[in-house]
Image (cartoon, rainbow, N blue to C red; front, side, top):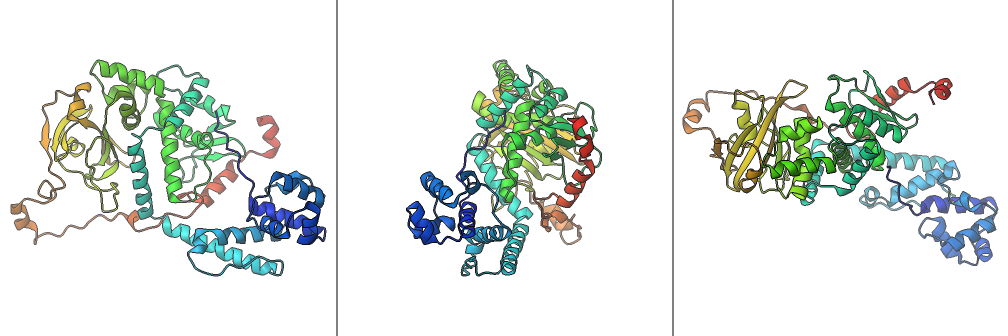
Length: 493
């Protein structure tokens, strides 16, 4: 099921320009037209300038007086090149970017030559481009991500509208339980008129590319046949259409869409009804475990752990936290609605912050046996928490850990609650783990000089494009290479 866009009011600026174009084409003044439709010229002027929405009765009278079909007045396209420039200038001067400059407005009257209009519109477009480039930085991304994290926490990371969409689509595609198959994902795409194709020349900056014109989703080839990754990527590509996404206008829009498509993919791979039934049965048996949830639905450990954050609080009454930590101790992704104080900077961002070395997400790297989950209790200033941890290796060879934990009172529902491993963390107190012992400091502070590893992305703005971080040129060249031959369109259809 695709979300249908809601009916919107007509674009008033374009509507006004189409009325003006039809009026001037017939040599009518505002006064003359006003007499014919029994309206004041001042009202018609407001309508033509996109400042007033006309009633339907007035629109019908205008169409009759101007001898044009009503549908022509309501069309989306500007009536001429000049009108398109006037509309672009009007929109630019009504936006917040121009308003912040404090400059006088240039009225796009008929006396303004077309070359001048072109110059003004071009300058506004360049101003908008530079503004977008200036904000598409890691700092902007961190701030937008922090806002999203707080919103998710307030909703217990549960999005019921997306849950319903995913449940409906998977059921229609024939899903009855267990792991969602590649064939079922392909059927879900087919229901939307899309075909999934695997290619080995995707642009480096894109995880997938969707060709809406020809109904194709391009994905990378399977590195692991039957793996969870390609099903998730295909579902994320489908989600943009299902959720009615438009091109993002800011980094905040881009990140919000990423959250929504990731949520949709997870809700399809682990549909709410089946997932909650599985979790409720395990809770009754006091045998909840991320690894069992993972294996039951054929997804990665990280995907299963994140899905728990969507369902555990709303359906099981269990508050919890989730962490992905690198082997350098840096927090890559985190969520908590159970009171665990995640490390954060002065802006509230958690990404890149070091977690306490006594937390299980870092302690796990010191253990010899990493094949299965490990369990630990940690006493903190915010209370005692129980955690299960699983380590893994990323595509670049670096290790990471996935932690799912709950307050002490809720450990009774989980396998591993009998763990005897217990640590104490007093972070953010520096003496906990951020300050080296005095004897080591005395010995090495003036006798050493480490060379820090530089992360170049902290300095560079993301490449400008329609989507932040994506190279449009590479994507469009890719689509040109793979677009079907028009002569083959009939056979392919």
